[in-house]
Length: 102
Image (cartoon, rainbow, N blue to C red; front, side, top):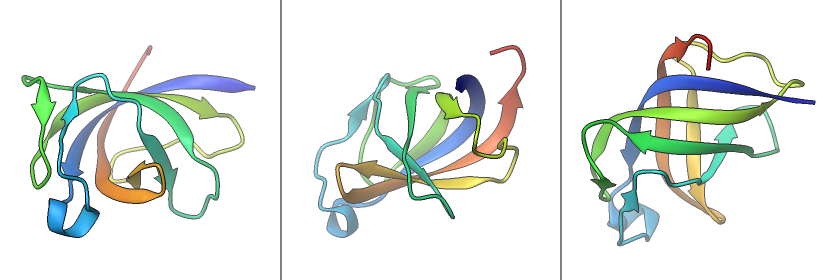
């Protein structure tokens, strides 16, 4: 069984020299989200706040809506995760707040 969980988060894309990714992401991207200690990805959509694009080396606030498996513990402020493009680690996310009712 799965559930939805929305959070406000800080999203950071790694520089192209580190990630190998030279293009940024448009708001609405659905990358792979990997949480420390789990070997499965979580599906989710990232919508940037007050901008349409995020380029490598930049960071911004975003609303992330996860389709969150119930077997994983609930996430809260301070929880960090990796953002992958295929098998490449291209960025990181940090939960700033859980959005109730989403």
